[in-house]
Amino acid sequence: MSKLKLVSWNVNGIRACLKKGLLDVIKELDADIICLQEIKAKVEQLPKELLDIPGYHLYYFPAERPGYSGTAVFSRIEPQQVSFGMGEPRFDCEGRTVIAEYEDFILYNGYFPNDGNGPERLQYKMDFYEYMLEWAKGCTKPLIICGDVNTAHMESDLARPKENEKNTGFLPMERAWITKLLESGFVDTFRLFCAEGGQYSWWDMKTRARERNVGWRIDYFFASESIKDKLVDAYILPDIMGSDHCPVVLEVEF
Image (cartoon, rainbow, N blue to C red; front, side):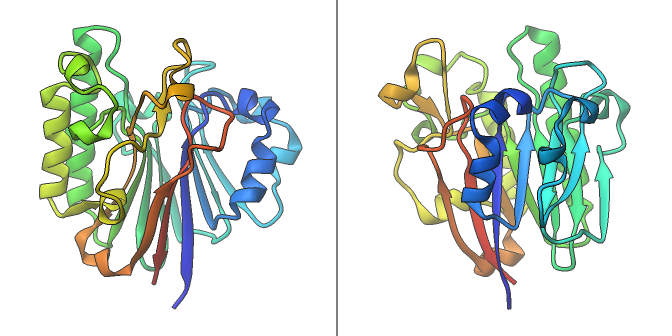
């Protein structure tokens, strides 16, 4: 059996994060697979030291729109197959999904849409959710889903739930989708190991909320229930800076 350490992190701009020590963080994390979201850059805009990190294969999926969205996977293990997107052009043009198939599981790295720009964008987010769930149901191997889901599921997943009941990212329909995902045969890995609130993965930079830990847990690792007994640990790394999000970690042993 081999133990794997997986990391997911919304870097809020990979070039900005690079200036804040991203390469040192990658070295410090010492993970087998690192999934990044909101990279906001094309490959040709990145320096060689990021594109050729020793020991890692890089799978990079930028959005068509410059300086927006995008996902990337750094993997020490070479996947059997990699897909960029889910096969739906209106989602894939934003570079939101890298899917890597390994021997024992399929890894879904997703930057789920934010619904903060009105009703049309909320509908886009919900359409993405539903399309992704149908895709997940069709997987033939155990599935590990990670990324910035842009929704806090339960009241314990944000510091001020009552104040945010009508705000995007905590709307009933958004929260209900996570419930439906879990009922479809997945587990919220962090909650297997930590039931208490007060641990978050995103903080509003404008209000300096991180200093007061007024945050949201919107970055997740979900896993198929069939590999629940193989999950070793799941945790959040709030002390790692460089973005308005922090990394979240899953350790699994196959």
